Structures are given as C-alpha cells and as structure tokens.
Amino acid sequence: MKLRVPPLRPPGFSGRLHDARTATAIGRWLAVAVVLCFVTGLVSHCLQHPPAWLADDLPSRPSGGYRLTQGLHVASGIAAVPLLLAKMWTVYPRLFEWPAVRSVRHGLERLSAALLVASAVLELFTGLLNTAQWYPWPFDFVQVHYALGWTFTGALVLHIALKAPDIKAHWSRGSAGTLALPAEDGPNRRALLTGVFAAVGAVTLTTAGQSFTPLGRFDLLAPRHPDHGPQGLPVNRTAVAAGVAAVSVEDWRLTVAGPRPYELTLDGLRAMRQYEATLPIACVEGWSKSADWSGVRIRDLLDRAGAPRGARVRVVSMERGGAYSVTELAHTYARDELTLLALRLNGRALSPDHGFPARIIAPNRPGVLQTKWVHRLEVL
Image (cartoon, rainbow, N blue to C red):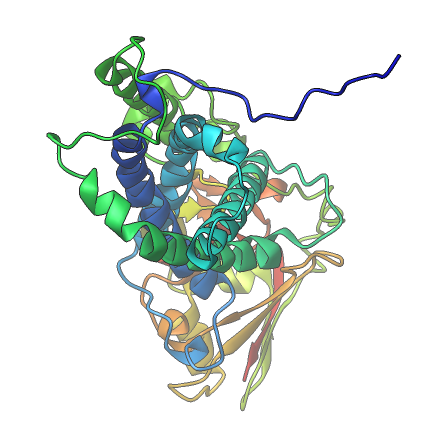
C-alpha cells in the first residue's frame, strides 16, 4: 500500500480586518508613536552619552527639558506596543503567501518587514524591561537599545519606500482594497480601531503618571510612582547598593582641584552662601519628580578655584565601581546658576540614599548624571 502525502498548501484566511486599509490606518498611528519615540530617544542618548563634538555645548535649558523628552520617549514607546500588536495581527496572513518570493521588489519587501518586526519587538521589549530596571540579558542595554533604534528606523524607511504605492492607495477613508483575501463579514473595522485606540489610551493613562504628575492617581501599571521614596522622591540606587558606608561628617572633605585647589568641610560648605532651586530628577526609566533643593552653586566653587569660564568639571563620587561614579559637567551646566552642589532636599538634609553629604543637581540633565555622594570636583 502506497502512502500518499497531500500537497502542502498555505492556510486560508478570511475576514475584511486583514486588509490593506486596516493595516494602513493602524500603521500611520504606529508611525507617529515610533517616530516620536525615536526622536526623543536620540535626545536622551545625546544628553546621557554626548558625542565628542557636542560634549562641551550641551544645553542646560530648558530646566525641565529632559523630563519632558524622556517622559514622551517612554510614553510613546509604551503606546506603540498595542499598536504594533494590532498592526502585526492585520498583516500576519502575508507570512503564509506562496511563493515566498515573487520578484526582487517582493523579496526586499519581505526582508524589510522581517527586519522591521524583529527590531521593533526587541526594541519595545527591552525598553519595557528597562522601565522596571530588569535586565535578564548579558549585553549593555543602552548601547544595544540605541543600535536597535537605528536598525528599526532604517528598516522602516526601506519598508515605507517599497510599500509607498500601497500606502497611498489605501490612505484615504474612502479607499477600498484587500490583501487578496476573501471579504467575509466579521467585526467591522471601526470596532477594531476603537478597541486598539482604547488600549493605547488605557496603557498611556495608567503609566504616564510616573512622569506627568497630574496623572499620578492613575499610575497603576507603571513600575514606579514619583511620590514613593525617602524625602518624597524615588531612589534608583541606595547608599547600601552603591557601597557607600555611613559618612562621618568630621572626616568628610570636598576637594576642589583647579588652578587654586582647596578643601572644604561640610560646615565650610554650609557657611557659604546657599541657593535654592526647584528642579526635577528625571530618570531614563521614565519616572520624574520635581523637588526643592538648596546648596552651593557650582560656579561659585569653580570661581574660588580659579577655573576658566569654559572649563568642564569632573565629578567624583564615593560610590564604588558604579557606571556613573565619575561624571562630567559641561561648562554650560557648570556655569548655570541653577546647578548646585545640593546639601538639602525639600527643607531637610540629604538622606544617605539621596547622596548625603552632597550631590549634584542640574537643569536638563539625566538622573544618572545627577551624581550623589560627591567628594571631589576636578577642573578640566
């Protein structure tokens, strides 16, 4: 008896929700989200890891600029998740098209789609885990996330270029067309789009409160709440985690290395003229919160050391082995009147987890660069 194997056939799909018009309608909103996410991500990366040509001229204003751009970056990335899932659902029948490649253009289209989907999923997945500070992978998140952003953007540009005729044909509300699929009755397009946008609104409303404080009461799904933490401000890295033991006020000294180097005790810093500033701590994970800080202006410490006007400043923390235990202040930050070596937070002396005895607070600066447990400033 001869065994007969039936020929392989691609599965059949029906329903008008897998058509080009639906894919285009969702795709243009997804494009808005990912372009906003990409642009604000570039701003974040340049402020956190400035290229050499920009390092000396980073802008210190607007003071809440990083808070705004990083909040938008995380919010648009989260909003892109349901949009990406819906977009993938509308077009997944095309994965089963046969023959797999019909022409050079069709092959490039499929290649760009594969690269686009893979990079988008990885970008959003790693970004979401970063908001929770969970890194279950062996690579450096920042560099890989940055590279994936460029990979995704390049694949998106190529895909749009190849699909431009189809996008144009199905862009307007009155257009019709399908992906050569049977047009059987099912849930209508309006219901699907309403559900997708409701999902986008829900995830945005329940996570944006971690940076947009008026929505803080709805902050149900975000991993951080801006009001939870010592002295009313969240903490990413505690003194214990940083390996900073209890600081003896009598033994601690601030060293300012410059043309006229000197040292100050904590009492000596307190005796200097104190300034106040209301500035946010804004972290790459997406949360931010404004607070009232007071301390000594960095520019006054530099003037006392005879620092040139255009000099950068290296800030050295007592933290042991952290990736940001040594940071630099561009002259635009160092000379800004809002940049403080802060000694007090919300009217009280800094707690150990907030950097006692002294920390940097500067406008328009990522939270990881607002160095805590400072004991040395070096004029470069």
